[in-house]
Length: 366
Image (tube, rainbow, N blue to C red):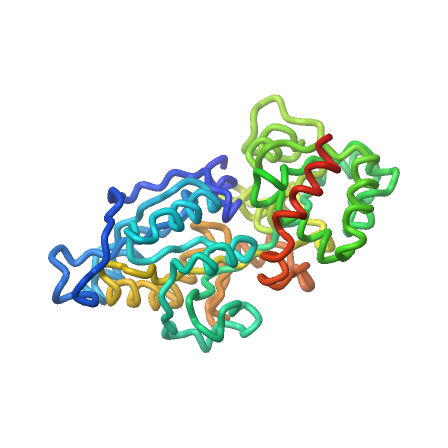
């Protein structure tokens, strides 16, 4: 269960995946790129965060279709991987980068690490997910919602209705019950801060956090500590569970909690406060200066295919961007339906992210 819950974090990376990884393959292709016929070993290198996962059979199918073998090079969590891609942009480590999300997208685009490519199948992706539709430097691959999760048993035992909205979290009955991640060090923590900015605006989110702090919110460095150590409802945590029945996690955490459990329960032991969510979208892009741009384009096309998109939910606990892809029963039965997650335009995030995090840190951590 711990591995599945770790994969459920999406952009914050903890799960190890048994794929061959290349050392950084620097340098640009002076010939303008080589296709399958020109690639000596017929490989295409995918650079990603540690949570990337796909079934062996799916990657083998890509090889059968294109002649390219996929090598995966992992670079830590999403922030670390993006920063490394920026630092190595003159000598890119691979052909495709997967895993930059809408909270970090502007940083990657402003640093010019991607080459334009309009992927086949993009017409099956909702327009609202296409953050760079004008230039096609990145392709949306998956979505996920960061939300407050709750321990059903705790609230049943205490005869207390679980919170459902951000407004609920500052009410006296939920005092000292919530643990969240540091917005300066954690992707879910940052997304939760952005959820409050989306809800309360530039002038209101700080007042909200003052109320949340007064109501006893606990802040820890990252998701694993919050979910597996401090949250009382985690099956993947340590034997000595925490005492916080509310935690910032993912809308996909409940399906992860019941994966592999037999017999399957009527409902997951954790629930989702659907009025607290912020939508994350993960993108893939062709790295500028890639040694194998044709293979990279083929891989991006494959990432949008139903084959990959329908494999992805139970591998990385995210939802497909391709609207034709079907969700597995585990998601439809146990996952939360988030109809109106908080969102912010990537440009607004880019303009405000650093100052918001600085203000948040001064307000909440002091």
